Image (cartoon, rainbow, N blue to C red; front, top):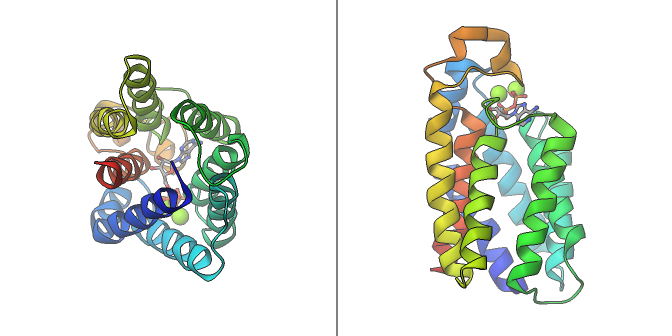
Length: 207
Ligand code: ADP
Ligand code: MG
Ligand code: MG
């Protein structure tokens, strides 16, 4: 992945959360406070604006800047969580304008670890983790099997979407939705849904 592709991914993510903003907000209205679409849209629009204003010349620096922007622009839980993930991804990458597939996989693992560390969610808690973990498992499995970035990203996108769908049956144990207890069951988690959009954006720009 080079700087241009990393930028294209974040731009496509911004486009996807803008296009699906109403859906994300509707999902968050059912089990949260109805701002997930607005939060994601505002955050990723700010990321694109910040990167366009001063484009970093290294992939790692680009993700660090994107993460810092999300953290500073989004007040909800999702800003610090996605922001920390992107920052950890960027920090884990070797310096330079291009990174190898194995390094990217390691960076994505560091991103998930940051989400787990900040939010304390385990798989099954009906959060971002429930799309991110299976997506990353699929990504790593594809890489181990010899896939290129496009193949690994496609596998990750499918797994993230399945993971997000599977949150419908879960009871939330983290975040606002956990206040609802059993009443959180029967609704797809907004954050897992936005995670699936972000992995789909990666698949789209690498296809
Ligand atoms: P807020 O809940 O502060 O309004 P958002 O609506 O933007 O923030 O984001 C809600 C999403 O954040 C949830 O759907 C869930 O996926 C995710 N989330 C909340 N708490 C956690 C956590 N502790 N770990 C991982 N993801 C979380
Ligand atoms: Mg919310
Ligand atoms: Mg909120």
